[in-house]
Length: 128
Image (tube, rainbow, N blue to C red; front, side, top):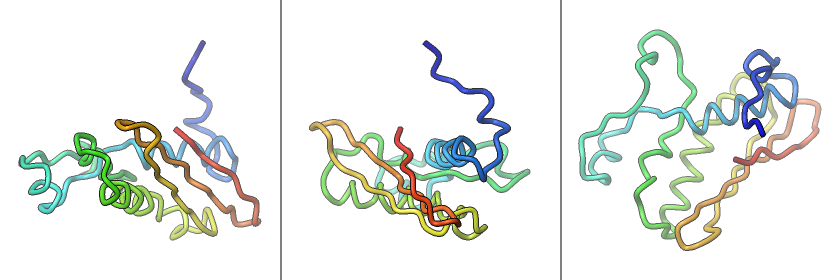
């Protein structure tokens, strides 16, 4: 069984496959931690990606909460981080709207789903 679809790398963002790939990249790429993130984590880990200095990176600060207990505050923070990471899709008019729902599946498992409303009004969900 293959978990990778290499065609998604070159699929146009206007396709469902390309949009799904864009969402996953935006959520799973590590954005730089802010000073507040570093204080909350108790370490000065910067995160981010080496390519940030060369190109605009789509990324999320979600990695900064990976070791946190899944309290309601952390779930709200994850929702905010994911929606911020996906906001470029609306800003660049690839989508009309993006709504992210985050919930605690099990005591140690956070789940999310992004509902994308495309510019033509069609909606679809992207899940991990």
